[in-house]
Length: 177
Image (cartoon, rainbow, N blue to C red; front, side, top):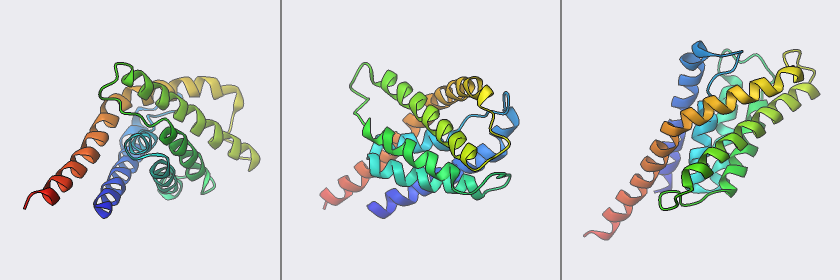
């Protein structure tokens, strides 16, 4: 069962990286697009916990670091998304029965966007990346958080439903003779 979960998580991350780098990069506002990989990482963290969030974040970030058109030092997105995934996993809750569940998910997405963008920019500053502009950080953060919350409305419930459905189906098969 764990192999199936890992395979699904890898598939979600590969699809997210592909869509983010090929499709979503064409609808950028002020150089910022919807961070689909971050949203998938948060969905995996909310459905499976902080360890899954950290591992998924590292894996998704590493894919973003090496997939063209990567123009930065490898490892920056891996670190940023691993920490964001770990923190999102700490916030893990059952959101289906709680009336404030969607607000918790939206707050988690905003926190993840803020944390990952800050860590990415901070590591860029430490590495003297000329593309890091702290004067535009607030504007970029606002656009990123808005994009990510809108994308999370569709992606997070879908990923969590599929992960839950796979587990429920496998457990049901194990119980039935």
